[in-house]
Length: 161
Image (cartoon, rainbow, N blue to C red; front, side, top):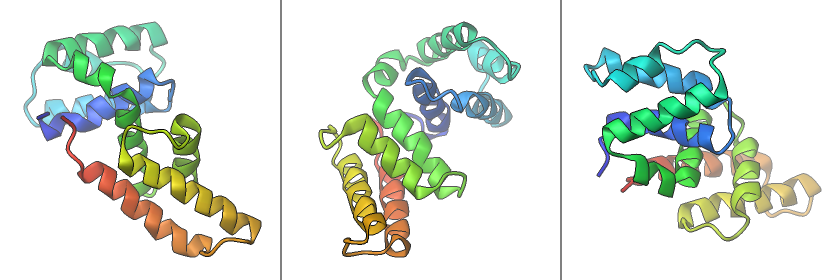
């Protein structure tokens, strides 16, 4: 099982690796948080020290260093989709991303073929959202928002192994 204090950093790293470059700031911020709670790995210090305009190649190299140093390279490589989904779920729960953005991303990323049942639930909610927007749905967008938030929280509550 992964140390839960590392999850936000790993989620940002997975998001970056999937091309969600908005995760750059989170990667730096989460490394800083880890330093503030006593983590002292040199690679975490280096990530926390990155400038916001660091090159993608530099960031990729540092992600490799961090995951290698933590012994989590394989876990990150195997779970990029789930790590990115978790990062986006954190944004939804924090009110920094609209629920529809999460459902749309999940639908584009996974279709109806995810390896994770909880992500399939988010994709189905995207279908429901489409129906609500089209006017033929059984639920309103107002009813769907808390369901998406609950699904996002369910994904975050699920342990990453």
